[in-house]
Image (tube, rainbow over all chains, first blue to last red):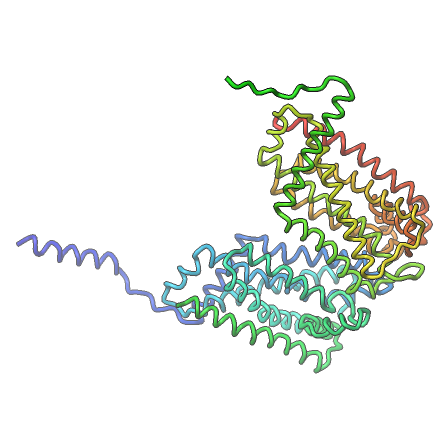
Length: 278
Length: 276
């Protein structure tokens, strides 16, 4: 008779050990997104390279272009800095936003992404959370060149309000641009392949823009290309906000550039992401 | 039992010299074989240099003031020819470091071959690649409208100065390749840009803050850039009147010779001290 009761007792004991406390409630979309945002923040602690890369390069560009090229472009380094520094802030967040894609691509290649898919969470929270967590990096990446610029003699006519609006606008821009890199992260299987393809795109986006020099000094055909580049519209809007000279048209074009990145690449990313879930 | 005849090591000075050149040429051919099997690296290197020409000429060139007037492309090209010679340092460093880390250099040292041949072979291969790079750059310059206005003797003199600088820079690359590990070679690449930009290659030191202009003028690269601008008959030599600008051709010979006197013995010493 003992043989029949033993398994029952054993099973009850096992169940008791497994469910000593009640199962925690299923994470809501916001809770899951914030958890992934925190994970993104922790990556900065463990992989500080991504922060230093995003900050060191723009600072180097600021110093190099201001002192070496400034006098040859604008007559004096001071005059050139007033034009160039807002562009460097755009450059900084553009380079910084790539790490969103690198991070996701590493998760995909290491299998972390597949582990997260097995969790009872709202699926898009992985991407949205990571994008939210990156906002701190964008903030630092845009603020550090600004502080260096202040030391070198940059004086924003827009004051503190202009600076805050410019920083907020850069946050929005970086968030929207990050979907381009997220799309490539989902398309390409290896981190090497990802970096190999995104490097030339970054190069074209940044250099074929009005970040460094006004397009009026370029040949006609190139002026047209540069004027069509969304980065140019963003740089113009940031310049206007910092100097307090922004027009509704400039701001509108800047928002339109952000919206274009978000709508086009956000949609493609959503499609690619949902395909991966199957 | 099979007896393998090892080649006899020459004893006379002439024989030894011939031995160095034959073995050196074998090492050079090995480098050619590497490039032939991996043409992507060669194409990328050449295209990267052309891309920088296009970037500076079309995107930034229109905004840059050339001292004494003239077209920016004519000012830029002598600087770009010199810059490509500088960019070659990383290529040499990576090639040498890769051979050291993979144990290829140790194999060469254990063979009955001239010890000088390994370094000479590498230098010859890189010099020949530099000539190819210079030809491609000159064609790119001609395509964007650059012209050498000087005499043919002056033209070949300028080419000679550019290649003399490259020969000196090869030995910096060889030395760095022998003392650095593969992971550290990126630092050699990173150093190229500040050294290259902090010269008169892209903008005249006259337009820089005084302290920075002085540093740029005394950069060994600037001597070659200024001398080749003079010899090619291109604008923007600079009106600072400093001694180093006035004697650019002399300095374009002195700097490479000085670099050779420092880095050639250092390279030989580092090569001999490997694995000790």
